[in-house]
Each structure stands twice: as structure tokens, then as C-alpha cells.
Amino acid sequence: MGRLLAGVVIIMGSSLLMVHAACRRGDEATNGSSDRPGTDVARQFVEQANARLLELGNRVNRAQWIAANFITEDTQQVSADATAAFIGATMELAQQATRFDDVALPDDVRRQLTLLKLATIPLPAPSDPKAQAELTRITTGMEAAYGKGMWCPPGESGDDCLDINELTTLLAENRDPARLRDAWIGWHEVGRGMRDDYQRFVELANAGARELGYDDLGALWRSNYDVAADQFTAEVERLWAQVQPLYTSLHAYVRGRLGETYGTDVVPPDGAIPAHLLGNMWAQQWGNIYPLVAPPGSAPSYDLTTLLLARNVDAMGMVKYGEGFFTSLGFAPLPQTFWERSLFTKPRDRDVVCHASAWDVDNDQDVRIKMCIQITGEDFVTIHHELGHNFYQRAYRRLPVLYRDSANDGFHEAIGDAVALSVTPSYLAEIGLLDRAPDSSDDVGYLLRMALDKVAFLPFGLLVDQWRWKVFSGEVTPATYNQAWWNLRAKYQGVSAPSARSEDDFDPGAKYHVPGNTPYTRYFLAHILQFQFHRAMCKQAGYTGPLHRCSIYGNKAVGQRFRKMLEMGRSRPWPDALETLTGERQLDASAILEYFAPLKRWLDEQARATS
Ligand code: X8Z
Ligand code: ZN
Image (cartoon, rainbow, N blue to C red; front, top):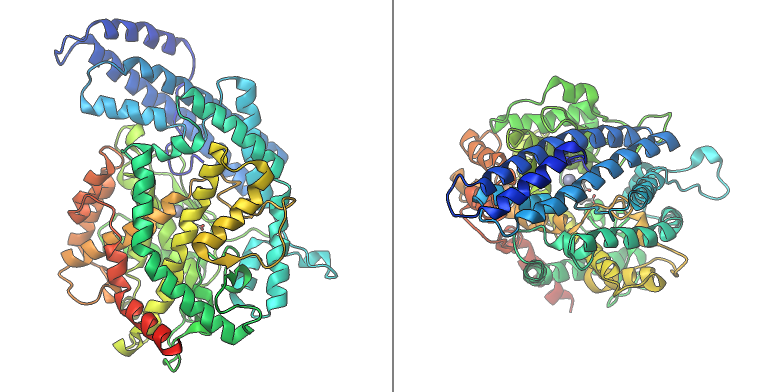
């Protein structure tokens, strides 16, 4: 937490007492005039809140940066304390903001007060300082435990323990089902030790959400989208219904092809796909198994990993390519401090949280990424993802602190991904990574590869919070934490665990965002939104061909409109931001469906041919 949002809070001191007194005066004078005391007092309260949030938020950001870069008992303690101070103050401010609930206020002040109540997301806490300290110690500890996670294969020397980076490579490249299964089981041990902590975290954070007037933590998270929480849930379901047929076609095709590779006793033709065979620890993106499922007879196409290795591109070189895309759109280059302060490669001598993240440490110019970069096509795309966060952060840095965030959290996750959709073969040829762009005869292969990442992700993007929402509401109790997880994995993704699981396991804990307490529906939304952004920007570029071959690289006019949306931050409800770039006001899966339409036709032909 605190990485993307201005950590933000105000402290309890004499200034707040002043605000209390002033608020009461304001409440008495709601006479409709624009300069009545109510407005002035509210405005002053909001300004002080912004200042306080900035100061405490920056302190949290620094403490968390250090804790994630040097995992020790002490850094965790310092980080937990800073986070507790931030949360305590935010809770107080959020409660004070309710004093203005019945005061007529200008839209801008009203919006900031509303956002103040949401500023505790993702981690509200009860007002008791002891509970706050306990909660932040738990969350900091779970993230650290994840960061230190290792699998030490039995019988091999201790030096051969594998961290999540090495396991990522193993899952991506290894084709021995027994080894894959062992690695999968080995990594999932990391969750076991978190089960009790997670249960206590749920109790405490729920209590915090209730103090703010929400039914539970999930209800608070879902209220973060400018519409009623129920309406948001319905929106998510509507979008899933739009894309589900595409996912089902992809799943059936991949299952059939994996059955040919591993045998139908391992991959049953009508059942779920074992989760360890999809090229990724969480079976969330399947691009790594492209060689196993490539269209029969398709020409061997380029492989970005091979191209990067052949050109000796190093970690910083990869980031430079990413920056180059953004500057081609007219964005200012990243500041020197970005290059000095970011973490690009895994240090050899200490534990760090390797899960990629983007930071805005001072809520101004001090943006950074923290990533254990590997020279792969996958990380090339992830770098664009992370830089999307940084360029967004820089674009909104002049707004009031409460507005220094994305239009909604899906927007933050969609910016870099939308840019990376323009990393087409022609773009790679233009920047000299590829000798010459392949002709259109390989389009089905290209689209299949993209779908393995983008379409395969959709149900996973949905289910992580489906599970958490049920856990937070109490519909799923600790007695069935793991069973409920696998029920959802089967229902949405159609994948199965490679070994028998029990309630001694806590498999959600083996996915970073659960111990890291990062809401996940944002990624589902981002996978819809990024195609809407891409379609709109391609149209603005005057492009009329198939969406998957469009690249906006170098288009400054498009970049200017893109930047206009980013500069709005969270100052307006998200449909306004969406409209600024796309002219649309609704989340709409028709763009991702349009992008993959030729593939859907091809997949359905394959299904007909084999049935
Ligand atoms: O966590 C991330 C980013 C950082 S915000 C690397 N992503 C999700 C994941 O890895 O699970 C990007 C795609 C989904
Ligand atoms: Zn992200």
C-alpha cells in the first residue's frame, strides 16, 4: 500500500481541534451564499487534510520503500509504525469529514471530502491504536514473508533454493510435468504460515471498515468507483458475461493442445486444466506456453526474449526502451533520480520484495520502479506497465493531494498496458529490435500469443477479489478458505490444483496481492480498459486497419490527448476521464472483443474441425 496513492493523512494535534470548532460554526450557517462559513471551513479542512496526508504519506512511502528493499525485522517495524500513524490519522480525518455531510458545498470540496473517506483503502483500521499497530504489523509481516519465500527442492543443496524469480522461469520454460508439479507445490508452501495472520487481518480491517460505516472491507473496496457498490458489482458481472465466450473458446483450444503434449490422462479433454501446466505459477497469463499451442503449421515467428538476448540488452536498456515509447508520445523524460533510485535487478546479498511495483515516493518528482528484471519479453511488457504508473503519477502531481491518483484504480493499471499494446512487430522493427516485421500471414499466431496473456488473465483478474469479498463478508469462513479458493479457480478459470489441497494450505497467500493486500479487480478492469484506450488512440491516429497491428508510437497528437486524461488524476468521476480520451463514458468489452475477433473465428473453426 501507499505506493500509488499519495499516502495521505493528517495528524491528531491542536490543528484538528481547531478544525472541530470551525466545523461547528460552518454547520450553523448554511444559507446558500457561495462564501458562507460552511464552505470556507470545509475548504480549509480539506486543505489541511491534503497537507497532512502528503506529509504522513511520504513518510510511509519511504518506510515501505526501505522495508521492501531490505527485508529485516527492523525495517518491517519502522514501516508498520509509519503505516499505523498514517492509517490512524486517515481514519480520524475520514470521521471528521462526516461533519460536512449535510452542508451544501461546491462540487470540488465535496469530492475531496468524499475521497478523504475512501483514503483508507485498502487498509482501514479500528481507532484503537493498539489494534492499528497489530494490524500493520500483520500486513507488513505477511508481505515480508512472501518476499522471502523460497522453494528448496529436497535432496538438492541449500544453495539451490529457488526464489519466485527463478520459479517464474522454471514454470515458464520447463516442460517436465513432475518437476513443474514439485515447483508449484513447493512455492505454495509460502501461504501456509500466513493463514492465522490472514484471519486476524480480516477481523481487524473489517472492524475498521465498520467504523467508517461500511458493512465490511469488501464493501469499502467496492465503493471506490463513483457509483453505488452494488452497481459496481453488477458492472463487473456484465463485463465478464461479455468476454466469457472468448475465454471459453481459448480455454477449450489450449486444453486440447495440452492434452496432445502431456496426454489426456494428465489434461482431461472435458475437465479443468492442471494449474501447473500453463507457464505461470498462478496460471494467470499463459503466453509462455505459446510454443506448445502455436497454430499448427504456422511459420516460426520471432520471440522477443531471443531478440533482447541477441542484442545484449540489459535491465536498464529494457527500461530505456520503455521510456523511449512514452517520450515518443511527447511525455517528458524520467528524472535523473528515477535512474539513480530505482531497483532494476535482484540484489545478490539480501531479501527484497521482487514483485514489480512503481512508486511515487514524494508525491511529486521522485518516481521509481522496483523490479527484479529478467531479460524476457514478459518483463519488457511489465516494464511498460510499471512506467505507465510513473508517467501517470507525474502527470497529476500538480493537483491537490487527494486528486493525485488515477480516475479509478483500473486506470492506473491500464496505462502502461495500453501503451504496450502498441509494441507490435512493426514497432519492434522500427526501433531495430526486429530486422523486419513479419507479414500478415502470421496474424493468428500473434493474436493467439496475445490472447494467452490478455484473455487468459480475465477470469483470474476477477476471482481473486471474488474470494476476498466473500471472506470479508463472512460468507467464506476460515474453515473453508482454501476450498472456496479452488471452487472459484474451477468456476472462473477452469483450472485445478496439481495435488490434493486441504485447509492446512492457504493457497491465496502464495499470490502476492493477498499478503500484499492489494485489491485485484483493478487488473480485471484494466484488461478491459486498455483495449478501449488502444482502440480510441488508434482511431485518433487515423488508423483503420485491424487493431492488433496498430501502434501509436511517435504520435504526439495522440500523446497529448492521452496526457490530458492522465493530468485529470482523480479530480473528476472516472467516466469524465474516460470520455476525455475515448469519447465513451462506459466500460465496454467490445474493444477487446474487436481486437481478438479474427482469433475467435479461428478458435471456433478449430473446435468445429475437431468435434
Ligand atoms: O501486479 C501486477 C503489476 C504491478 S501493479 C506487476 N500485475 C498483476 C499481477 O502480476 O498479478 C500486472 C498484471 C496483473
Ligand atoms: Zn500495476
